[in-house]
Length: 422
Image (cartoon, rainbow, N blue to C red; front, side, top):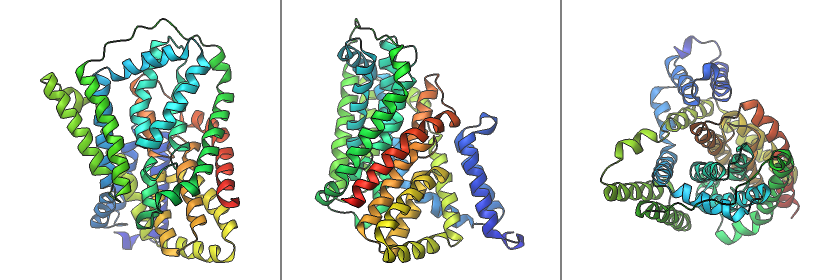
């Protein structure tokens, strides 16, 4: 049927754009996954992409699916075992009645979780814990604290290679050694983290000043299951660092750690599997698969070859200007198709064009930090949105965009400046 369409490339781009718009706006309040999958299915039905190619595109996300399932299992079993409530009570006590101290504490913890467990883990694991902390503290408006989980998940996601799965996608087999990575990205990361904190703190200041935080909070008892869940999360972090150092993909170790932790806790409790399976947010998997198929269809229009050629010629002429432009374009472009599939395209173009490391680094910063602009910019933010909806909270695409437009640009400009000028 694709041969009957006068301009297949234009049709492919149109369907991909409409599907992405559906993911962002959620017409009829349908879940994001429905729009991504509908776009992928329509491309196949119209013959714009062979079904075999669509399957190949979806299969490129296998490592991501494994990673997400492992993290979601860890998060759900930890939530059910009361680990988040236990951590929340300690966090509230440490805040000593100060809303701003609690805000800063959440930000520091979010930074650590993102660095050593990844930005997706920050969204999946930390968000329920922060909501539990605000509930224990008697906070009336939890969104300022929940916003921390969304924004730090991207702002701190290029401190280490494992801080964002997209990092491994962009550099692929050309991943710099850890020492060179730290030398390249430590200052840009630090500036991005600090700038994001300052803007968030300023924009949320009025809400924070209006809050009161309880000081007399009972510490719930943490049972054996909760202790094992905590150990599983720590072990997962260690496994991710080890896998990254060995050049192993992160999905399988995360899946094994999450599944093993869940099975041990369920064995101790002698049941509960149905409840865990029922409450995991499985809808994120078809969403990711649909996005991968959409990007695969765009690649088949010759987009990758054109991007690689343009990037290569620009880098030969003026590497610094190319780094600035590439980082900025990818940052804003990641919000159109989500940064993980955008990272696939950008990474493939970087490898094909053999650009200088500064240009590759700028593009990576764009892929990682750019999604702080919109609610669908990164998988971590979509996971965060799913997590807060479970708790009865919601943030519209427009509301997030208004805040993201203040938070993201200064952090991006400072991070790129530190990378390029240094």
